[in-house]
Image: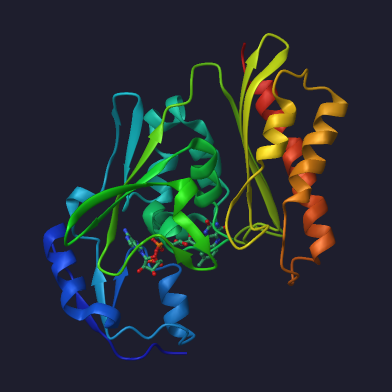
Length: 288
Ligand SMILES: Cc1cc2nc3c(=O)[nH]c(=O)nc-3n(C[C@H](O)[C@H](O)[C@H](O)COP(=O)(O)OP(=O)(O)OC[C@H]3O[C@@H](n4cnc5c(N)ncnc54)[C@H](O)[C@@H]3O)c2cc1C
């Protein structure tokens, strides 16, 4: 289908984008890579009268280290993540996650800020950012505020972003040296969203787990943090019984929706399997 008519705006500064958002209110939508918004407009699930394109605002791009964090501009594309030597060295979990998203065409245009702002439980960055303890900088007419990933996702397509706000930057704490990482994603084919996926960061203390961060994609209306599974692993050797316990506890918090990718029981079982695989891979990459 063809989208409803709209007026296109291409501001060259963040201030102008925020002012346009304020002027057009509910009638406006921000446009980033367009790979979620334009399909919704073509299906007429969204029919904004004004599109405000963020592509010409230089402040929203770039990936840089600032102290013990990596700052990622909201308009950085998946491809930018894949090509970043800084991320490969400091936060390889994000590179592994970006590689699992869609296909090269989507990765060339789709942005990290758009992936997070959309509030789609099928998107991968929400769980990746939750695992990393990232925060999002949101700027509106009254100034900027910083919201943690843990407080950002409220429900299906429902986030902490308020009318008039733009996500400008993602701030990612650099995991301590020696942290193992993995993003295990089950999908039916290239270009599909996750049937189930698990992100893991794992810090070992000798043979025992010092701490684990475990999050899940597409297994509820928001990304999930498997807090009980994380707690169960602390201080344990990562043997078969610890893996089975973590997988069981991760499955318990899932509330998946049946769709063409499988029924709820299958998805829950796959959540356990992805958790197990991600823990094993992260373990193999961790050093004490
Ligand atoms: C075939 C296909 C397969 C895909 N597979 C996956 C997948 O496996 N995993 C995955 O994670 N994603 C997947 N996607 C989605 C893709 O990653 C999108 O690019 C992403 O969801 C949205 O990013 P975008 O830059 O395209 O945002 P847009 O589509 O431009 O915007 C999405 C929404 O976010 C809002 N928005 C965008 N930027 C901002 C901002 N800076 N501040 C505030 N609001 C903003 C927009 O107003 C809009 O409501 C797939 C898409 C396609 C077409």
